[in-house]
Amino acid sequence: MIPVAVAVDGPEPAITASVESRLDQAVAAGRITKAQEQRRLERLGQILTNIVNRTPPAGGPGGYGGPASDGASPGDPGPDPGPPPAA
Image (cartoon, rainbow, N blue to C red; front, side):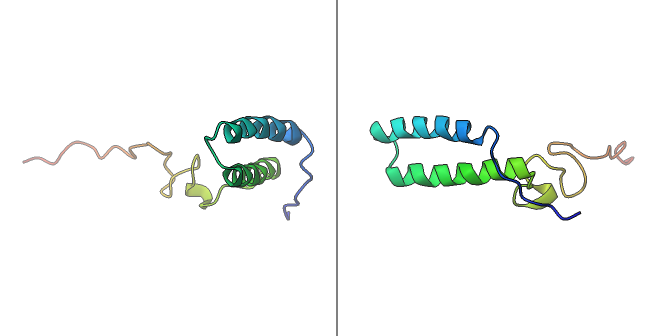
């Protein structure tokens, strides 16, 4: 089956409005620039679209939250190597 992008109409506008309000406050307080605010809003739009369309993060299966390249979960020490060899 070929993945098809869908329109992002659910909670995206409310989330975007909330984040934009907070970013506007940060701009007004001088903590970030207007250009930084715009870049963050653009990135937020990409992230929300990816979530709705279930697009995996860049990096493939080994990316953040996915299985490690060897099939183990992140932080998993792997198989037990067994007892140390006799000296």
